[in-house]
View 1: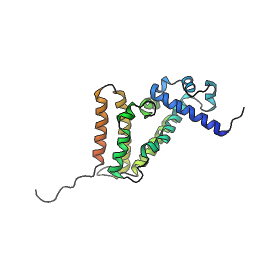
View 2: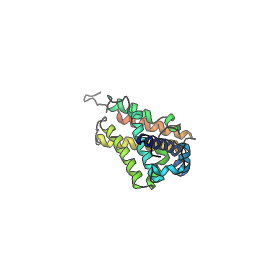
View 3: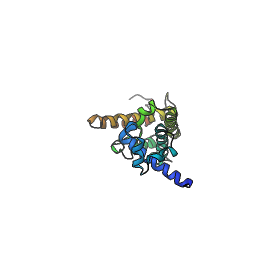
View 4: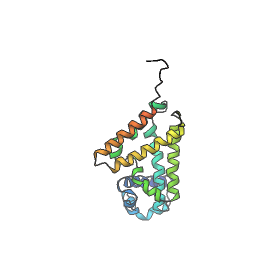
Length: 202
């Protein structure tokens, strides 16, 4: 039986959604192809009509995650710049809800180590996602003394994902909240314009 392209695309998206959810909760090792397909309401045999391997599924899940998160992270902030933009953007990501939401929160803390050890395809998907996000930030944050706008954007992305990974890993301890608060404070302090010193004597 031949299916319309729309049906195949919808099925692929169901598999990706199921995989993202399982990757968040169980990591790459715990999300077998069988479990992913069962969660998607499909048979295991249909998996390879959409993905060459589980490694390919991981790469596509990372790519889809960045695409889907664009509006969640940046929606409504189009007109904001510099400190005002970063204040909204950073708070949207570095919060307890994103840390604790294993259904729809950030997938990266659960799979970064797997991507590191994974295929070039997975690393390329991560690199493309980080590059696109950094480009968005770099267009909205100014350079500073000794740092370009792109460097500030890349450092912000690195600190966001790194802090969230540590906060998830220490979630059962008070340190977890402290990591989120420290990362927020550090990023937002760096976003504030420098205070100009008066040239006159006090």
